Amino acid sequence: MIWPKVFVSAALLAWLGVRMVQRDGVETLADRLAGIDPPWLCVAIALHFAAVLAGVARWRLLLRAAGLACGSARLLRSFLVGRFVGAFTPSTTGLDGWRLYDVGREHGAMGTSAAVIVVEKLVGLIGMALVCAALVPLGGVELLGPGALCAALGMAAVAALGLSLIRRPDRLAWCANKLPRRLRAIGTKVADALGTSRLGGPDLARAVSLGVLSHISLSGVSVATALAIGVDASPATLLIVGNAITLAVLLPVSVGGVGVREGVAVVLLASAGVSSTDAVLVALLGYLTGQVPAILGGGLLLTGSREVPSPA
Image 1 (tube, rainbow, N blue to C red):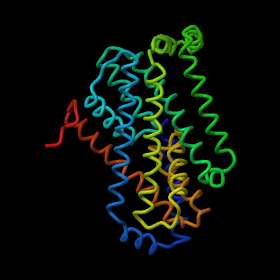
Image 2: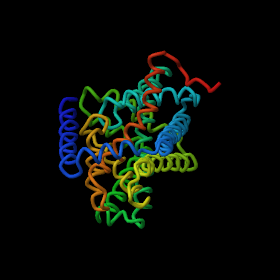
Image 3: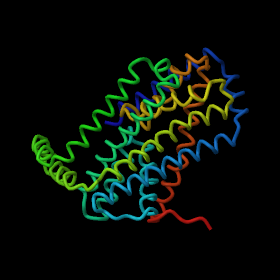
Image 4: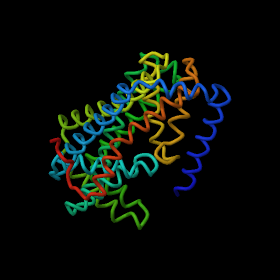
């Protein structure tokens, strides 16, 4: 249900607003907004588009491995529209659901399209785990606690187990048969599609690399927005916080991650001496700059264009 998630977002934003006013005052917020450096906001927007392009390239690679040929421009359009839909839904459900439906409808292969999204999630977990592990020596353990590395290893283990199951059609079929009756038919189709995936070692390595690039780009948005408002914190700290925000908004507890990202930023950046106002602005500007691809996707959806228009 959407209403509990709306409540979570509203409650978190209210708590953050009170905290900002009590600790820093309204004047601090006005000063920070007046001193924003626009070029760094442009960098943040560019990083969001870099993540989109990496996501599209990975999606196309996985679709090709599943036997579905789609052009890059066509998939870019679908991805951007999915970003627009995802702005109003928890976690990545809107983005993933739209892409699954859009490609599945066009090719008449909903099961295969769903299977590709499943594989993409598993590959993405490996990419996230690699980024988390790489940030540990930069201060990840000190900032996030000793459980950071364990969480990264856990994500990698879950993804590896999932990918290994893809190589065992008999186990996939067994899992599908254990689903509730209403989901069993689509589960069987997805299991069959996963079992026929031709994702080899080189393609898997490329998909993971693209996932790492996408995750680093999204994490780097926090660095750009922090520099835009002049936050006095090291780039490594900001990158670690950006990584934590990216992971936190995957939890389907709020609408579009609103409130969650800001709360994570306040808690983590407090240990680096960053004020609540600055921390909220780092996360909020990251969210707002991320809406630029979503707005473009909304325009494509309204116009009914099947491809992203090329620059003149």
